[in-house]
Image 1 (cartoon, rainbow, N blue to C red):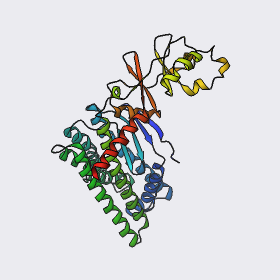
Image 2: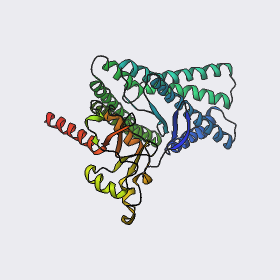
Image 3: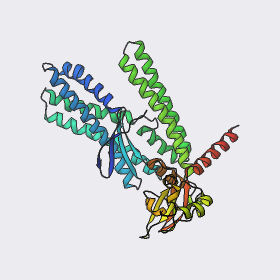
Amino acid sequence: MRFKSIPLFKIFGIQVNLDFSWFIVFFLISFTLAEYFYPHYYPGHSFLVYWLVGGISAILLFASVLLHELSHSLVAIHFGIPVREIDLFIFGGVAMIEEEAPSPKVEFLVAIAGPVCSFFLSFVFFIIAFFYPQDDLFNGIINYLMLVNFALAVFNLVPAFPLDGGRILRSVIWAKKDLLTATKISSWTGTAFAYILMLFGILSLIQGSLISAMWYGLLGLFLRNASKMSYEQTKLSLILSKFRVEQFMHTVKPVLPDETISEFMISHYPVYKTNSFPVIGDDGRIYEVNISDIQSVPQSKWNFIRVLDLSHPIEVFVSPYDTLLKALKLMNRYQVNELPVVYGNTVLGIIKRDVIEALIERYYLQEKMQEN
């Protein structure tokens, strides 16, 4: 069972969410700082003080991670790439950038923005520590944030996709080859780095460091899966970006404002047989009705209830000139299987998820046949 993320706030129009796994790492970081780091370097304080400072440090760490991801997002938005949200979770954070970069240059600039932000934060905390040389817990927080932001930047620059360094590597290869080849090569480096982390986990386990072994192992597994998934997503994006909605949409005549359910079931449903139907409202706007809502009405009332009375305003739609990739992403975001196709104020039809999935399945089948 997967729990939904907790929405926190919006910044620059980007929704920031907190995954439940964040609480795990928040506790582990606070525990490590409160029980080991601060007592060792800054002795003489109470248990509660160490835990308070440890908790504050953990929150400031994730604030740094948020700024790192926000840097990626703002550069992406600057180049016209939509960013839906930023999720903070057990391994840090991730910006949900909706589309591939349009060029290697943009890919490089979006990828490098995060490490540059982390290096800048590390430098800022270094300056603060320089002008505040007191040997106290406040100085400890400053030094911790300086070190952890530097480590965050360096780790993300490892050329292992989908880390920032892997995306930088992909942009360099992409400038010389195609995007799919660049993604394949950089995902190989990501997989190799993941196995190196898992090897460190095994060595840590042999040395008796269970916590380190667990983190190396989990991070290695996460990166291995993320690397493979990112490559498949890129391949899927390239496939669906080649096709327009108009090539695969199902033509559907909109329901008129005065049509009753009986008229609809006789003239519309047997012909089009989709699950959702566009409806023209009395105000000329486009509405939508689901067949399940219609079938929930007793047949004895079908002659007296208009389809429009069961309709609701269209929440999301696509243009006939949009790509299938955009259509599928909207379906996933709004958890629907069909989308109205609208041009101007005219309903042209419906695009269905199963049509897009059939195209993907056919493509992968052809690819498999070519490999054999």
